[in-house]
Image (cartoon, rainbow over the protein chains, first blue to last red):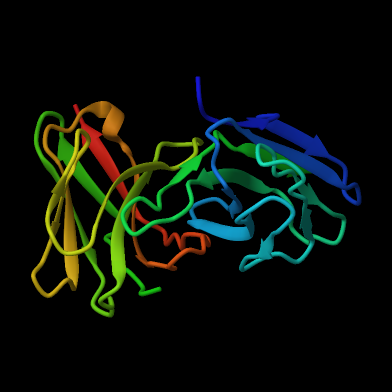
Length: 115
Length: 113
């Protein structure tokens, strides 16, 4: 099946530890994204990548880092510098945008709890 | 990207049509209207999008007013599985560059049995 996978579904970490969230897609999409969602809120963009070896900061990039070494993978590291890391993290991908089909496909999410 | 306004919540009886409104009075000519939905604790799911004309697919219909300042998403025969938060997003065509979507709080649609 084609799709986006995120692992693990639930993740617990101690305060002060870095943690890396996995995102893999086999849809052959060029663009990938990371969003954060807090309870009762919409999604906020953390980072996005249009092609391999290139990525851009989103609206709330502070305290996060990413890499894009392979087309299929876009891991997100939540560093100890992120003040409130507990949240639901969503990864998405999309095809090269054209005027009619720039839609994003989302993974199931990872719920991170920092104790 | 233009901002959108949606009611925070709506109820609909199972089997009836669910009509979800969205205001986007500052939309510009090159902005599309997208709808996504998010079932509790899952990733958002794309539903439909349009520019000027009404659109229909297997999930829903999108009605955009002639002045494009508002739109309505129609789920023709709502089922309990349609209970979700529905997001209306207006998005400029970036002409070759992919950037993120701006999600507001959406409308929490509750389908009643």
